[in-house]
Length: 323
Image (tube, rainbow, N blue to C red):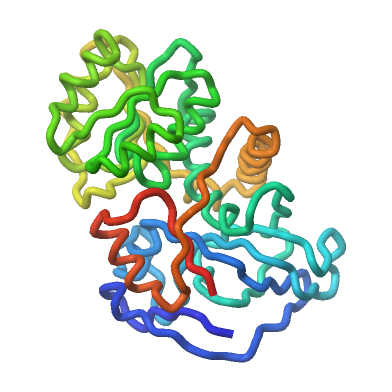
């Protein structure tokens, strides 16, 4: 097997590839031949040592994967060799073979390609948790999605659209805005060249109902000001690299609300609740209510270069590493 190893906190270019014997599952575990591993912003933060949870090196980054079960350990009854599965595991996904707790593995719908399944959990569970648990969206509402060409952004468009909402997508490039339209956004804003607050108010005829913000930085303040009466700012992350300081008077005005979304920590602390969220997402995929876009594919050994592209905002949608 091959796996990617972070030997010391730093830039993703420092990641190394190691060759090892294939792992053997123990009690309550399954071995999975990895078809693809999803790439997420949090993976780069773990490697840099800047995430709120600091993992001492050496470790293998990667927080989600999909593949085929190749062996089951003693005590495993609900899974068998040949099952198509996905897993959200926190760390360890950037590998060709993985041993996982059977309870942390979920069968994938037959209609879902394994490469797409590998990029599903982080983005779609975050968007689902944000719009179905932390706030709710009505069919008559308008949702503004920032970072709309990224994985979480596209998933948020898909989830909001599935709930009947109208979606305005905001992103930095024409390519990302095109991907957002393909996912179901009805209008777009190029927020590097257009006034985000003014355009969002114009397109929503006075103010949007919900802002989904996985970006932070300079875009949060104008997005907050674009909210209408009882508008909700849903704070998911800070892909822009800086954390915005919110003017409290703008929260007070129009009875606005700021909602924090830390799906990852919640999922680790509430595995039963996360299992329900994942089941809901997969059911919506099976029923054709959600339409995850097939991700771009890159070789596993290019993990460092892919993380650099992600940090430098050169990726559109999701990318997976393929052993």
